[in-house]
Image (cartoon, rainbow, N blue to C red; front, side, top):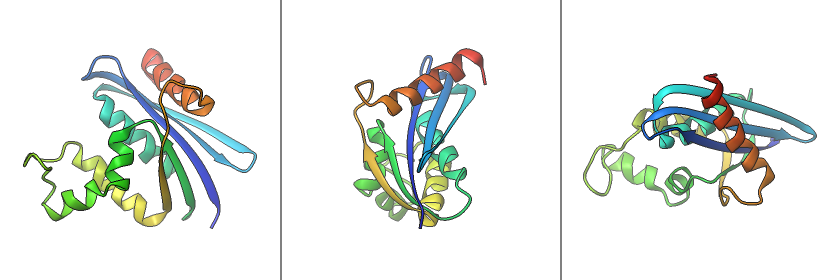
Length: 145
């Protein structure tokens, strides 16, 4: 299985408001940057969409190290929130429907295809690639692309 490193980030201007996401995929010496925009969204949705869109770029099952500064995204997998949500009929610990269920279900599907290691990085610090993802997300908002 080929190893791909993926860095992701999401941003929102207002919450809700216009949002963007960015990702950098690295395979050996090859790097690919992707980004996107939504007119009315939330920061959480942008964080999840960054991961989804990056994983959808992979043409076959891969070993993936996915880096994100979103505790929401990383903890959902590493602390098995998703398993608990699924067992509880997509209801969270406060007995409320899980927000962004559509995106979580897509991430669950993608997580079954790839062997993903979910890795938390500190946001807005010295991680150059994470900072690039943030820049891509903010540029997507600015340019509405």
